[in-house]
Length: 101
Image 1 (cartoon, rainbow, N blue to C red):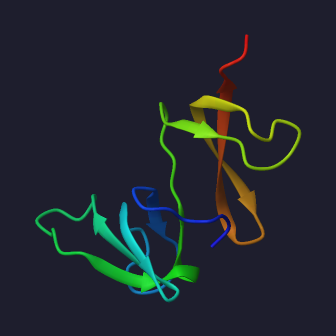
Image 2 (tube, one colour):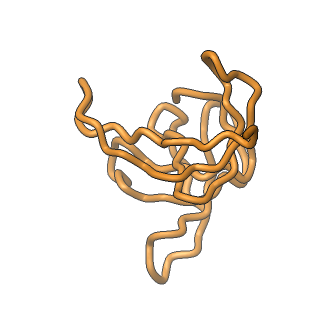
């Protein structure tokens, strides 16, 4: 897990049997993330996976707060998501337009 998860965060499973499943966090307990899937048609049960199996998931139009780097503490809107090739395969890289002008 790359950043602290919170209830209502969007997540995507990045390894294990449920790889690719996306949803919103409903609770976090003892290193387990409980989430309601959003991209599994006809499946509404809450899924539970180890916290190391999920990462935050962002979409264009999401409002975000920058947690690290030069713009730490700033807020903005995701305007684009780029797929970049990294050590672990394709890594998504959100492009953020800051609220400041």
